Image: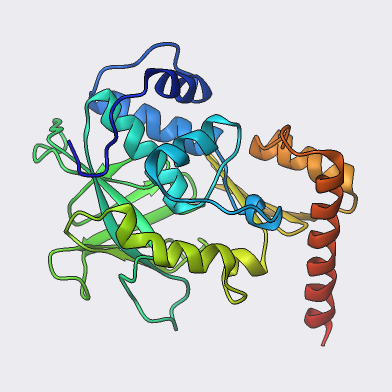
Length: 294
């Protein structure tokens, strides 16, 4: 049991499992860990649409579960926070860690808490007798399935990742991202974190003018073959055959893309708010186009 795991809420648990495609609670096995992780990145989008709708969120575990059960997605705190809660309810030993995303090579590596990372312990397998796993459904174009928490290189779909001891967090770990990914790497601390340790960074990321989530609407969805990525009105698909890009030019096309590609129909958002959302995204897109021409 971790310090961040709330008491079991069977109705929330079962609704969450249904969204992931499970009819009944599965056993706490290595196979389940991989299947649940894979189902989350395939079915629940990593997204900042809620920020652009003017919504504000907490990162409390039960709230994160409710956001996802309602048909929405979220960013790292919601994705990993909800999944950690579900796995805890299923009997896994899950641990929160304060992490820091290094967005590009020139940025400074950090463990400032701008990311929530997860590990699972006590789950040995033939290829991982130590029983410790690194998992992360909150990096957008990150892992498809968990990997052993040990130094190594792992290929999943079009991406190859490296995992090694962190150089800035003694006892912690470093994920080296594939060069085609939206980040350069991520470090995380060895100790257990709570929502209280991360809430200040969450507040900054959901509201500060210089936050990347405030500046740009994004959505990601992974599958075993690759990743779909929406940035404003630009849709990309990266898989083992290469990358394709197209611009979405109308509100119906854009909202259909959200629903069909990313599983985000926004059925709880009325027409007026959807129109305002499209107008905001279009204004930002046109500003970006004007800047790129200069």
